[in-house]
Image (cartoon, rainbow, N blue to C red; front, side):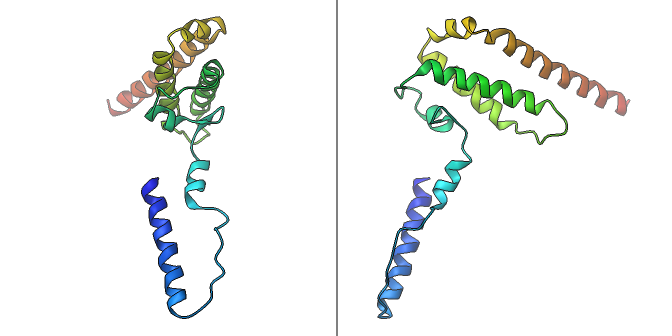
Length: 148
């Protein structure tokens, strides 16, 4: 991201310099929306925390780790449920990203594991994983039977 921001600034500087060399007075203003901001809009975030940035530095002090954990688990269950329907486009990266963030968070705050059980996420997670595994098994059996 820093490299793309640097490239954008370098481009803007060279454009401004060319206009000044031509003798024009340029009334320059900061662009309305930089492309790096557009890139960050598509980034998954939970509770105002970008998940990829958290994964880069899981030791980052969180204001409310319990709420972040709840948000991660809710979004994970939602993304897994959405990927189980054939009619929707499947985003396989999001559940992996959210599960990796959850594991990193539980490694940094081991006491939060009790919170997961207390809120009743364990049966939901087991059910989601079991349903996904059964779908993969059925799909692979169908594929093998079509070949045979």
